[in-house]
Image (cartoon, rainbow, N blue to C red; front, side, top):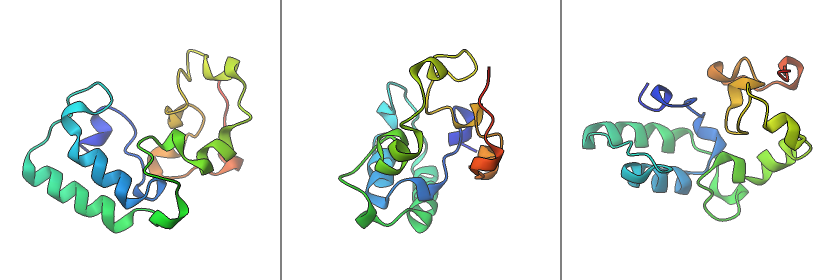
Length: 116
């Protein structure tokens, strides 16, 4: 709920544990926003993220953005810049623009809907 107040609550399996640890330690400067939480909230959310995080061995380095991962680039690399600039999309980080099931952690290609 805390994360989803500003953006899609990304599924933990989209980043490795090292990435989640670093993100949760820097909430006061979370992508140019102060997303500070109480220590109790940070501990609780971090436990959840680490429990379901992707395996670190499948990632190069410690990506802090899902859009920086090789898997994301592989799956989204052929999206034309004109699509990314559409008003309904605005950013590749806006998963829900094209993946209507994103809030349910459903990113199936069969459900994909590219907005006009």
